[in-house]
Amino acid sequence: MSESVLAAVQVAPETTELREFPLPEIPTDTALLKVEAAGVCGSDVGGYKRLGGGPKILGHENVGTIARAGAAFARRWGVAEGDRVAIEEYLPCGHCDLCLRGEFRHCAATDVHSNPAALRYGSTPITTPPALWGGYSQYLFMPPATVLHRMPAHVPAEQSAMALPLGNGVQWAVVEAQAGPGRSLVIMGPGQQGLAAVLASRAVGADLVILTGLSRDERRLEVGRQLGANFTLVADREDVRERVREITRGAGVDAVVDTTSAPASEMVPLAIDLVKRKEGRIVVQSIGGTIPDFPIEKLARKYITLKAARGHSYASVELAIGWIASGKFPLELLTTHHFGLDGIDLAIKSTGGTGLPGAIHVTVLPWHTSDSG
Image (cartoon, rainbow, N blue to C red; front, side):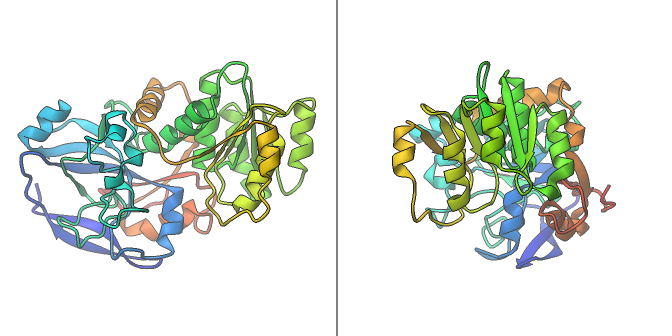
């Protein structure tokens, strides 16, 4: 094994450079991951526009093989060197009530929004030893707080890197929005998270899935139809409220899942109008600003449950990996582009729609050179 590690480091807004780091020592309760693939998340697009917290190695949708493992780490997870795993972006405490329920996403130890000292893959700076806290690197350090999932050997690398975004789809559509037999949903936004929510909804037997997007999303909407969306709506060409009313014969849907980055002042009132008269559910990812005239009375009278879409539980990722490994779903429709470490800038911009066209889920392969194929 080489004694140095090559990684792409974000050093300024929309600027990365390749750097070498020493291979770290591995104490008994830690391990080292040889990164096979790292997905580019939609959140990386916004984060890439600012430095926020100092130079860092981005990449939190990571899969690879365990290159080195201390005895205590191996015993805790029942793994050995050479095992293939996907790892969560969260690096939680492991002992609070949230962690013990598998809700690592809510643990204060990994909450970068409320804890300045939080550790999390893709956002912890390289000034925190041993620097290797992101997947856009040949190797990744795994401390005692690491949360991992076994990844079957037969799953292609780019599909393996979809474990976390598909886990989000399971969490938001199935767990939070309660998709299932007899249920109807509108999923707003045909990006990788929205398409994952479509797949998850149909996989659990939802009766009706309506996917919305914009004119520029024509290809993504077509992929959504192939994943099982019953209807796709183009929001800047047609009245979404009227079309949903028409499709549901005036009843509205049981739930709305907003995966867009549009302002909450636009998406939340729209979602409230789309759900049924009583007991609808709304799951929102948007954190774009405030809603000055929030329709609280309408929300209350319709007895709507409003939930935030924030990450995933351990169980949701496990279910997602099972679906990925089954080969039942056309995930190749989602894995559109891959790049080496020399192509990080284009990889992120393609995910955000300003690089190569047609990108949905983009993957970084640290041991390859970029061919953007």
